View (cartoon, rainbow over the protein chains, first blue to last red):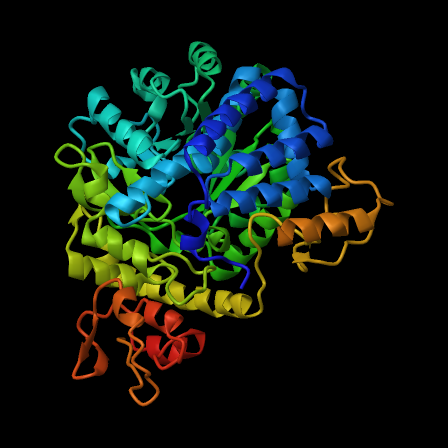
Length: 523
Length: 68
């Protein structure tokens, strides 16, 4: 199987003594300096950078990641253009903060040591990502959003959030902190909080309306904030879901951020109504041209009180989204991620602390942004206690269920699993109606029907190996959305769509590439 | 629909017992059983059983699930 088990991924790299430790810290520093000095956007320099990454890698998973990047760079994959775009077009402070905080702190270096320590002490690995709903207040009221379901008298205080972030960073080695809500920028002390964590990257999911010139100037100075704009299609579709004039407003904010050189992205929510639109080639190209460096494709999940289960993208639409995202990621200089279709990369469901955990505005520790059930609150316990609860343990232990990671979700793809956990562990609902999708027969019936239709499509794809991980593995090339990856070199050079991207030229010395591929796989 | 173990093929390697997220698998008198009241049908045991003696997997999907 192409997908490796989770344990292998996090296994600490052998032979890391104290000297190695100092070497590692030194190299982290050096990487920051190199990024500062260079104009290191040339292919050669970036390949050198991946070698340096391999040196500081603290786990076997990160060694593999560094080699994979090197392979992509060697063969002119659009991922190379993504790095070049970041290095050439971003403000130096934002660029360094993103690259160092996300890659070096987030996945490579010293945090792997903290993770191993945490594992030794608690018997399980901590998540790599902490999602926090910093506030539940929002000036928008979008279709499909649950923010207004919560009755929050008071969001967690500044000090309470500080306690959560401190624990996550210092004990678990979490440096990647997506922030959702509500609208995070509504909270006045939010950026003061961010300022305390210069070694973490905050990906802030925002409607864009609160990004004033002042806020943008502050973000540029901080460097560790990456706004992610929520969109739902072209003008008409976005405005219908999110309110009149939203699309135009977001476009203007994107132009401003691009001009300032701030790292930003887009978060799309695909529903049955807009799925084809949001993943169309034209739309993806537009986002990339506008300067989006990261595009998330989320799917509508029928959460909240009395949700509309018929709005979920159908099984066929999910397949379309999956292929479109693969294609965009492998042809455009934009990191594009499909929340469900990329199950194989994440080795199945990431909830419950397997890769991420969600703390809501009241402090309840929820297994997933879409599972509003909790057993602990950070006001009265620690994140570690919450992660050690039998409910979270079960969520982590069960995935990836029967092994088919194209149906990773315990809410909509395997609803009986979450219903079983709910019955057995009795977590509390974090707002009224939070368990509606697990208990109300008419919604359950709709979700069951959906799960069955998804299984028909995705079980066949899984059996035929019709899926890929984020990028081609060493020795493989991306062709197109029908073939996906293979070890055959595509006609006209390396990697399907990168010619359009200004990347590859034909006639390269393939024997050298073959040798590199062998080295990367065998070392 | 809870899973069942085909006791004839079971080699009693016990790997499924600690793997179950809801502790529904027990060993009594040298026979491994799945407690139908606890089973949440996640198919983890099916995935890790080397002898393939547990119901489940894609082929079983419709047969088992239509009863839902």
